[in-house]
Length: 352
Image (cartoon, rainbow, N blue to C red; front, side, top):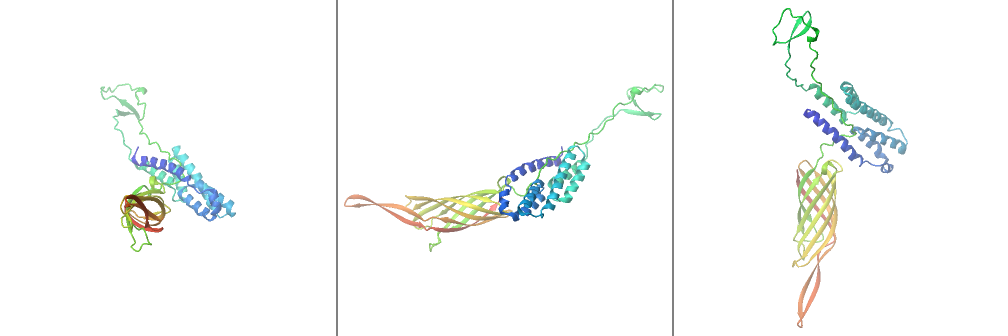
């Protein structure tokens, strides 16, 4: 089996697997009941991807929900493409490559983006153009007597008066075996090859108290994974540190974020944080949680993020011991560290 044929089998299997995953994320009929204008564009998108059955279903929903025939031509074309796809695979299975190629050409005339038809043409072209390795076969010597092909054993001395008999004729003709055609696995979508898991490392800067005239700053870093296992989702973990808050010796925040790719290179995200703030003497701490949203813009090798978080008011507590009239007395106090409000941030990083 050649490398091109192996690649074709792997791609067609992946197409079938991915079609199952993506179909689980399709918009439902209840969704389209509230978003009727999205039905026809989505049907056209599914048709272009080669998801003909899904395209036919969306066209039927459009007729039921909208009540006009705007999607009828697309539905007819999708049904014809589905039929051509099934016939193409059947002919390829039966070994009729020429007929399968004709069906593939008809399918591409209706949908030039059909990935399965393109892969079939590539596979059949490879099988036709690849050189066939011929085996070295040692054949016996033959002589022709009165237009009859007769076997002559070279180890036996020839007798001119030898009476040649029919059973001395060769009984088999050695034929070169023909390549067995591969059958593509039927699929209804194409591989999204340009999206794969990518890892990024970022450095961030944020102003953690806009109500403070000194505007304390916080610095941080994070690691992020985009398009996990080829999906639209990503995850990020980061740490933020500041030592410039009043009445505080240190402020740490640990963040977890979930990202979703809405279009290429654009990832909105939801942020959840857990912070720990120590008082100026370092013997007492306060903990809490915050939340925020952000947007990550990702290029081939770089990324930049913008976002905001909401932080609650933070106090740290301390205690002092004094002796009054020889009696040990403990006084407790609370100091404001961070005012309630919005915290903007920006980060930049590298993507691998």
